Amino acid sequence: MKNTEANITLEDLRKGSDAVLKKVYEENRDKFLNYARRYNLSEDENIDVYQDAYVIFYTNVMSGKIDSFTSSISTYLFSIGKYLIFDIMRKNKGKVKGDFDLSIIGKEDELVSTIEIEQPGLTTEQKLLQKHFVDLGKKCQELLTLFYYRGYTIQEILVEGHYNSENVVKAAKSRCMKTLKVRIKENR
Amino acid sequence: MDKEQLLYHYFSKTLTAEQEEEFNALLSSDTEFKEQFNFEQSLQQAIQNKKSTELKETLKSFEKEVALKSKRIVKRNYQKWIMAASIVLLVGIGWLTYKNSFAINYEVLYDVNFQQYPNTVFAITRGDTTNSLERNAFTAYELGDFEKAILEFDKIDSKDRKEYVTFYKAQSYLNLGKNKEAKELFKKIINKNTLFVGESHWYLALTYLHSNEIKAAKKELQILRKDYTYKKESALELLKQLD
Image (cartoon, rainbow over all chains, first blue to last red; front, side, top):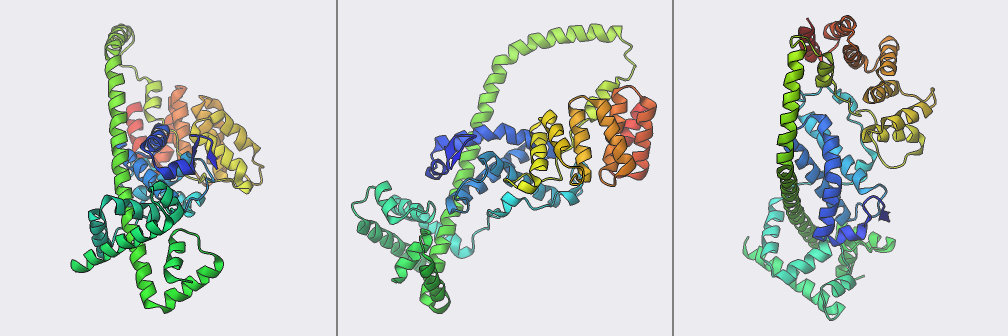
């Protein structure tokens, strides 16, 4: 589905080029900051919230939680951002400068309920996994990222990574996984 | 089906219903399969976390560029501003000398204290037909299109109209500078409603201030100070300035 506002498709976002990411960032930044200013957080906090909302939105696009646009990109960013702001306001209760009635802002946003907002931290094991993943060769990192992050099928990786055949992709993937497992074992 | 294939279909989101059943069964009965699944899922989370951190860094670099761009524009306009500011300053000094400098400028007090009340009641989400009129109104309100907001608020059938709608309609009038209409609605809220009553006393006081009706403004502020928590301190401060 085309996102009429920015003319950016879900597919464009999934490809993740810097140009597209920047376009979305710049197109929504001022609108978002204008909107956020009414909640009396500092400008740095507002920028931080905007960036966090963007990261959450993008993670949900990549994980397939958002598999079609039911709203414009702006609406997603605003809904997630609003949720994050209210979260900060709830945590800062008593320190909020504006006297807004916090009890009536707790209503769950329908859009937000369809996506994953909380970004859980990594377990010790996952941190170790991440460390060894970063140490893998560039080709391995690319392949595993295409598969586990971008959700590509073997056929799609074949095209994207310029492999010769599906079997070569499969063999390369098993080799990468094996290396990762061996390195983790060695470090235990 | 081959276990490796099942895992492949799971992570590429291509499991059929039948395969999903087989997948779930294996997950609860086959320890080795579960271990492999956990490993791949952990890897997925580790990669996702890495990409999120990288994205945040990319966004920070975009932000730096935006800041740099606006700095350049500010610099370019700097000289123009200096000239404009000098003229304003000269005219200003002349005006102040002419005007009694001890008089309170109520309009300034109004501007200092007036702040649009944010939409804290209606979560704007994707199309919801039952609430679409209210949704349209609040979308317009959040976007600052107050004329449209009023039109949409009016379209809501009186039996479906939530109490807070009157308050946001009054806010819309205020933002359009239609203080007379806003005043009537705030009075109505104070007399009939239970929600946003303190807030209405505050905004009513501000509209009185705007039209130089100081006695009436003070009366509203005193009620606010005595009976409500909303803007209590600001009300006290304003009362001191008005005395």
